[in-house]
Image 1 (cartoon, rainbow, N blue to C red):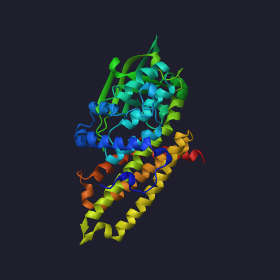
Image 2: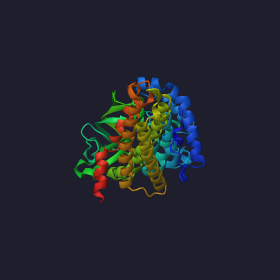
Image 3: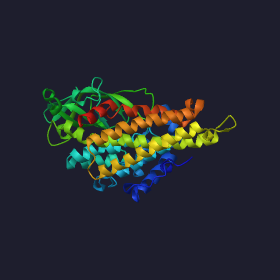
Length: 389
């Protein structure tokens, strides 16, 4: 297959040079050799097994951007991007280490006490702990101010009550950041983030592994907190009520990460489709020889190139600390929209075979759809961008 990383023919940006490129190559080999051969099994089981998480930890693919003193590799988001791109280029998009690495772990790094960082980050780096963040509730999706899950103080413990849904890594996660209300009267200012280690508490219950359209290999669950007691020392931050601010500060990286998955799948879809139309014959000639095919692929490659250049710029700005929430929202919305368009057009160029599950483009078509929903719907992204005008 044509290398998706090279399909656009662009030079590597400065942030992707040297050890980042080496990490991409290593991650690609790991995903190709350890995950891809078993991926159909993981899709059937609707879960990547814990053994694969431990192998990823041993290979240095967990917590790449966490400091070495906490068990990480001491990298930046560039290193996380390399890993997520490798996942997308190999086509094992349901392996949920992106959320674990660049969403869950950074909350602990940025807001956790020294004791919390030493306790949890090394185990996240080995895969002994698998991370999730419990934001969404049955009645509160993109509107994080509307969460109802309550954390009440009970001596030197919090008692957490409520339910969450659509939680990525929900069946396997044993370290969960729970978005709670510590003071419901204060709205956003009464929101706090509290860590729950599921192996150490009573009253925690996992619901069903949700039956999704796509990303079947990624466990996505309902979670129930029935008076779950955790020490008050599990609060992220020095005081209650900082949760909403913490969420807002970290959402740009989450949204950029969604853009990472988008551009990686775009590049894979193009590489696969170009290979396919060169081999597939219709009316006595290769499908690539039809002008319509050439025009369609010319459009898609152009848009993909624009998307990659924009994405590379966003990563460079983020590494330098300059990626603002509005630009991150643009990246999330535009790249995920483009992902849907490119994958759809590429499926069309496969003809009837594109609708068959044995062809990778069919899985990509299913997996791509949620990108416009999670991390804040694209409609919310446009609202945030509009407010900046």
